[in-house]
Length: 59
Image 1 (cartoon, rainbow, N blue to C red):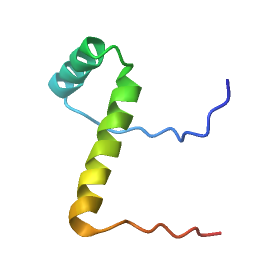
Image 2: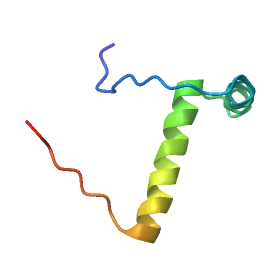
Image 3: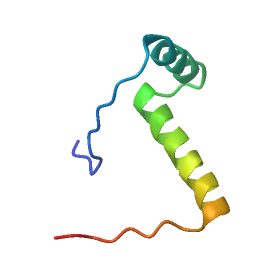
Image 4: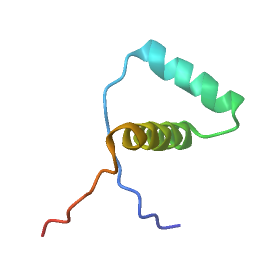
């Protein structure tokens, strides 16, 4: 099934990765879904404090 999501790789300490895997399993989520969920929550909190982030498309 096609997706409109962009792949993104980053480095993370092994301990954090394993703890995130644990949390994802406890919440019946995939690790990827958990990380996306946490990003959404962080962005919402940031925008609540600092205002909406406006993204401009570039060609």
